[in-house]
Image (cartoon, rainbow, N blue to C red):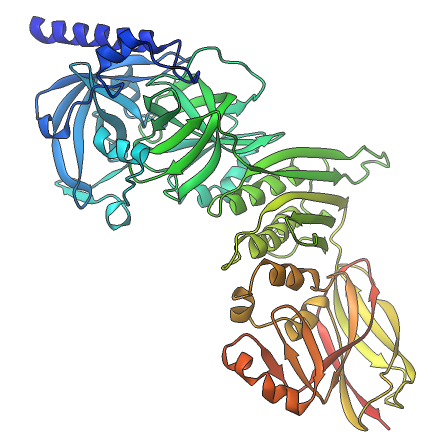
Length: 603
């Protein structure tokens, strides 16, 4: 490095260090910037280096945290401007990083958002990587003008839904956002491997065991450009947080990342300070190992050019309680274990966060085993609605363990409600109780018979059902049922089945169910689903039946069926030629599958 370049590097470093030091006592504290600092930085609080003045050969300095909480400088050499690289009218600045640490670690996940200054003026944020195995620490810079649009409300969508790929002589080189390390605290590697693809699809890099969360830890150092900052998805006994770097700060808000995390737009995620324990160098996946600390506000915007956080704002979270009652081991009982955590309220991220957290709650005890079944009870609390009941006996099958199937069951019910197409439900909490059973508690309906094949209306008959548990002797379940007093003489069908088979007859078809009128209908649909550990006896009468979004109307008169015709045409109703009349059921202690249809002659 020649003397002139070295002198420029030192001067720029000192200037930016002075700027950061001058603001160290005010950023993130919600007070005014001192007049002397504001004057030095310009009327807007931060002097900007315009994109129009960026050209090849300029040198600057970038700041990021490699270890601890204090940002460290690294030299930036401008290589040029890539026109329309981020989308139509959205240019990206290409730069090479210099210095012992960036040349050793390369471009690191979690570095996105690191502010870049030229002549003491903010030009943008390190935010994109070039290729996966690049030997040179070459990065893309999001111009600060685009990021300030997020601050000022002039948000802009990403062009064509992503970053272009450019061909090179050696093959394909991707220009892609620097990964945001998503640290899973309290999660096993197996849980992250199983469900991690749900988060990788959003540009997040799931990491288990290399970081954590301590919301009670105080971090006195202020949030300044170059600081690490985290967006929280889950907190409590389990934690999940994505970390990137702060680009711009003023007394009330900050900009970070230089690219979207999810690009959902308006978001509501707790914003915390973060401490970088270490930076792991890797040609495949270099990332920062991070512990999140105290909460300082909330991220409220996740846009194409930046995420926006506001100091002092409280994000709304969904509280979750999972009680796991373990199976006895060696005849010794063990106390239940209860997990308390909160998950963010976001249509794109919450269902996956709930799914993996429930799974980890089940797997995080010594009672977990491949053959374990779980008796689930609980409820989802929804503002303005009756509680959504969650009840099932869930066991292993040929594809998944009992723990996976239990998590998928909870995720299915949660997703049906949370993903309502017409209304966004306000879920105020979820409580679950999982009782572990040390065996595979499944059974098939093997056969069924009636005590009489001919009967009178109003008469009581008995249905004898043979169920065959997994790797156990068959057992007989007897269900006494009373026929309706008004039945048309003739041959009727009696169905003996699991709850899912009854649901198919009493629930709108898939398309109509997804077009439910609103949250209240969705709650009603879920709450009338049948338990899976019972055998059901239903009579299929010869009267018409209308299945609406919120209820089932059996024995519909022909005149009424004609009136309901428009609903059928609009696919908001299912009209069938038989009415389902539930006659009775019996609990079996097993997750039941299968059905049998019998004929009954009514005299």
